[in-house]
Amino acid sequence: MALEGAHLFRAELLEEGSFADLIHPAVKSTLNVLGSCAKVPAVKRVVITSSMAAVFYSGRPLSPDVVVDETRLSDPAFCEKSELWYMLSKTLAEQEAWKFTKENGIDLVTINPGYVIDPILQPTLNTTIEMIFKLVNGSETYPNSTHRYVDIAGQVTHCRDSLDILRKLHPTLQLPEKCQDDKVFGSQMYQVSKEKAKGLGLEFTPLEVTLKYTVESFKEKGFI
Image (cartoon, rainbow, N blue to C red; front, top):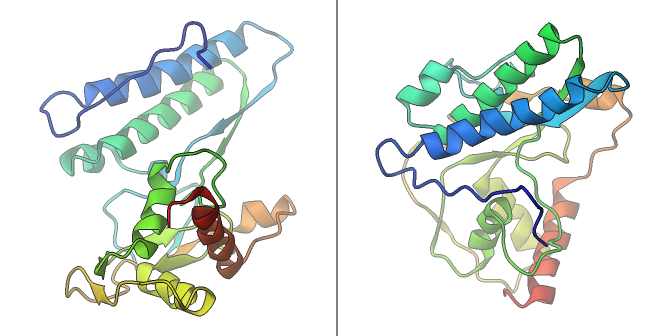
């Protein structure tokens, strides 16, 4: 269903200069919404669903002892230098949101989810769900990467660990045995703070449960 006044922006991030197609809409759309809120006296608080991308990419060292929370903001200069355009768009949009709401007396709350997975509702795969799909679609290798799942207890999980769980849950699936590279596992392991979520009474879902139902939804949709 089309929404009047809404436009689809497409950014080819491999083309020089086209990152503006991602950055500018992210910042402008955020400020447009906040500008409308500022015109309504009854609006006292605005909640923005941002991303871990806005609070993670700073270039500072990571280790199992490091706890990432909302105070560890991403560094725009680091994102730009590293050509992390999506991360830059989220970071700049959130920075501008904080600046605007402070200047206009609006109470702002941001939510910074990480890697969001669950049984799919739509008929197609989205970007995050596709990463799980690539673990169960017969690929020969798996990426040497970690994921920050949004519905578990502050856990950062390597793809290898997810595969270990999937082998137990779905032993008949053809799963990759080899990593894509020979780098040391866990070099980017760290903790994600769950204190604010716990304060709101959020009950965390075990990764095993989420992966189980996500893969079952792949079967129901005919993807595997």
